[in-house]
Length: 176
Image (cartoon, rainbow, N blue to C red; front, side, top):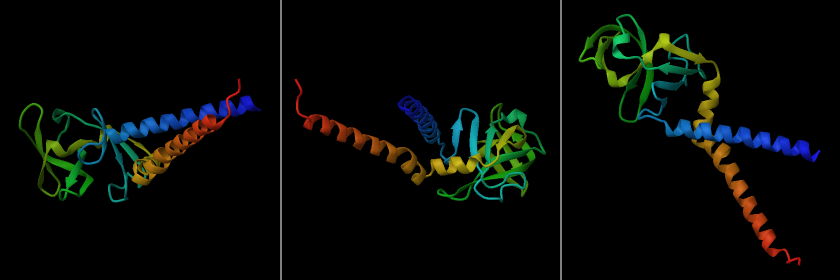
């Protein structure tokens, strides 16, 4: 029985460690718009149903950033819609015109007839992958309370337990 509990404990600690490390890496890779980025991949969590009928609340979309040469008229793209300094939404729009500034930068004219700088471009919808309901889990984990209760609180309890065990060991009479 003790061997089974020990194996179960090792499995639980391993799973917890993987979740803690993955979550910490995701939080450390936030960009200026509070979206996790790994190189040319962005992890977009759909937080409401107004993004597109294709994407539902709770979806996780992994978007690959395309070069400006790969984006053409008529493509649907994800982009950051900066309303003010504190409010940034992620939207989808159709490219109705493209003006190349140089080999790496372009300005896109979006439906609604407004210009979009390359800085706000995330990637094309055609090169993205969707994982349904995974975004809800990641959203909870990346929240302040999620991080507090899933990462900080268990580590605090373990730390207090270790201090208690050290105090117990110190108070124990020496056996010679």
